[in-house]
Image (cartoon, rainbow, N blue to C red; front, side):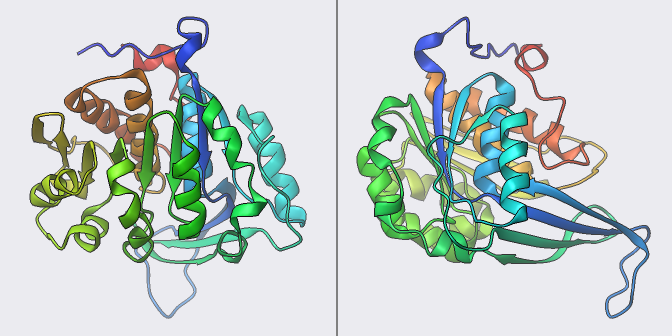
Length: 304
């Protein structure tokens, strides 16, 4: 199937997306062999820009969209590095406030297979954010808005009231997913994993959870179930796309890339099955990349 991606020069009326969410420094440790808990494991430690909101924004920028990231920045050395990285990756920060706090940090330990073993996130910067610290009135100028539930509930609710284009949400975690409950009828799409969907709907079966989300008012629901595939529902369509057989390099960022793909499809007016197939394709690229955002992602590549 051929999917036409919106390039800036081809569809200038539908290419501006704002992402509200977290931006942090990712510190990832990966052992050379199987992880041995309770011991020092030889391996590699990498420090890269990350955060759900930032990852979504970079994915969209690589697809050819004009992206603004409305995420709080701290006032330390990490903030300087994060700002530089965003500018290099084509992510606008004109709407990102600088606060007198330490930057958010995400510390992740991988197992020997490329899956996350455990993680700790310090998101005090995001948690402290208030409605008055963000220029939310600017959201009406965008063709789409993406919400990352790392931000406090009142901020997410205020942002939803200002958005005029399709509103897409990523629950981030089962605990933070509850921040989106009041927003479900306003969402063009939501992309929870199995645990997040269960927290929102009470349904442990991903197909039933996707259907329940639509019954709760979401226009399109996409429930990722890892190796079991992606379940989708909305606009009179429902189904499941199996996971692709591929060599896993790094699972970090795959969900973020799928959310970005879903946001792109909603802005461009695609049907739910086409969006689901596109999300699976983009996530597969991320799973095969050592980075949280695949450098292979580009408009020309994804048209093939």
